Length: 216
Ligand SMILES: Nc1nc2c(ncn2[C@@H]2O[C@H](COP(=O)(O)OP(=O)(O)OP(=O)(O)O)[C@@H](O)[C@H]2O)c(=O)[nH]1
Ligand SMILES: [Mg+2]
Image 1 (spheres, rainbow, N blue to C red):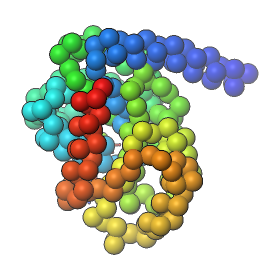
Image 2: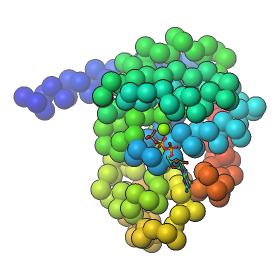
Image 3: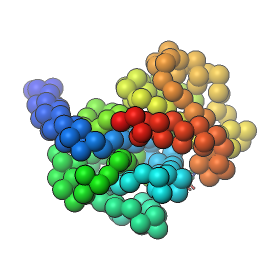
Image 4: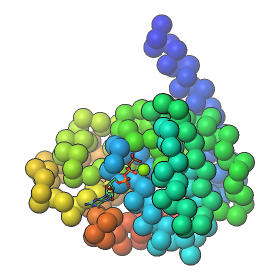
């Protein structure tokens, strides 16, 4: 019984996601679904990316947050359109909530919308938001076993960033074990080892996302 209910929820979500995807295509807007554990650095990555690209592209943000608008507050200095979706306890966004907030943006006048999903490696992976692609972020302080323990996200992501590489030497993160597992789950995905706060290898990410935006 429970499995049937879950299937209905996912089917309804998929239908709405396809509507969102069509709308994005019509307006030529890239929609990026950013997924990570709590604290891996999603908002920090958006902060750096806005700083780097906001004068080149027209960017907007959807902030998925369980209870607050704190991440939106951190990003508002960039003066780009930001809409907060409070899930009121929900552990992920869904396509219906995305569809509801899209009218708040002038889509014709945007190149890209980054969605910061709720910090969680499990549920957000199951809910298609109508995104162009999923961006998976993982950090060295979470342990090296995440790709093998939460394979769905790493399998589906179009690009993966390993953040907090500046902290590598202070952790027991086993880089070769991580890379081996990642290779087993998704050996072909573009992958960058970065630090958003120490500005390590960030140009690799900026170049990659720049190319995605211009070739959308
Ligand atoms: N040392 C280090 N700290 C980082 C790096 N990137 C982010 N942080 C710090 O990690 C903490 C969490 O970063 P956030 O950007 O808030 O993480 P988040 O994924 O948005 O968190 P939630 O929205 O709560 O899921 C902050 O204190 C950041 O300053 C990094 O590359 N290196
Ligand atoms: Mg955040």
